[in-house]
Amino acid sequence: MASTTVGPAAARTPLSLRDNAWVGFGLRRLGRFVVSMWVLVTAAFLMIHLVPGDPVRAAMGMNAPVDVVEARRDDLGLNDPLLTQYWHFLKGLFTGDLGTSLTTTEPVTQVISDRLPATLQLAVLAFVLVIALALPIGVTMAVLTRGGRRRGGELGFAAVCVILAAIPEFLLAVALVYVFAVNLAWFPVAGDDGPASFVLPVVALALGPAAVMARIVRVETLSVLGNDFIRTARAKRLRPRLIYTRHALPNALTATLTLAGLLLTSMVAGTVLVENIFAWPGLGTMIVQSILQKDYPLVQGIVLVYGAGVLLVNLIVDIVLGLLDPRSTIRES
Image 1: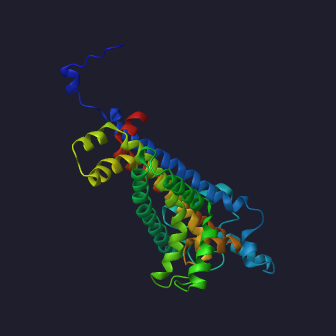
Image 2: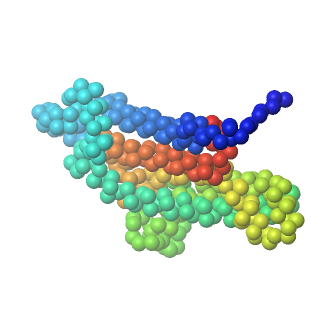
Image 3: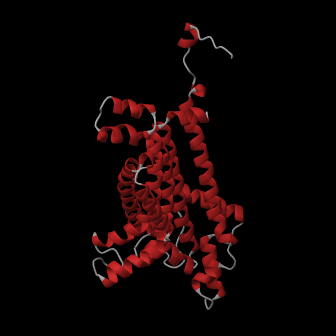
């Protein structure tokens, strides 16, 4: 076994920035974010050129005069060389100019800023509901079924979670509308008409991810409850509530937080379908309309917003995960 001698001089030697695990961790995550953003921006730019047909002709209609269509293409810069268009696209991104909508002639940034708050409200409320349901249910089921007890409850919990997770969001949304809006008339059928109109879209977005996360929380909590420090806490006769909330839950959050980031990104993407079913005035409804109208500058802008949101959430989750569990950072370095 190799031995390592650490003298007083070595102990006093300050670590350089290159040797600091946190600096390396942050630089690697930031580098991945920048590269991913560049790939996203490039893919969004090429999208308008890879799609067959002329988007300007499609947006203006087949009966539009040729000179009018060409003038519109000149205005949008679509007759410039590809690299020139790419350069102008990148410059526009840095100045906050995402172009002009082909159908409404409004600035794309204006359309997005008008619609983005409604989508964020849905996604954030759904994520809060997922956390509020998954953590207490997962921990409670872990405590109740620990050591093979209540086998029937464990099987029932697993079956319900699998069923909820397997139901597509749009089917769940349609079922909720049929039961609670059409038959019972408890909630509005569609649109943003006060707090009651949030209930069904948020539930449709949150139920599946909450079921998945509750199962993960249960498994992680079961593994933590078998550790020595939990047995020590019991030997000290700490209250069960303190053992589960102060000692077990924080240690079970590492894997849960990783999953939470993935679920949040999937919920943001899921808003596209749910918003269309509930006629919600958000980006999800707008991107479907833009695709049908072949309004590609607007589609580009919304895709960039969705993609940047997903990448940003992943970056934040990685950083928070590194803060909660420094061992992952050190192992990676």
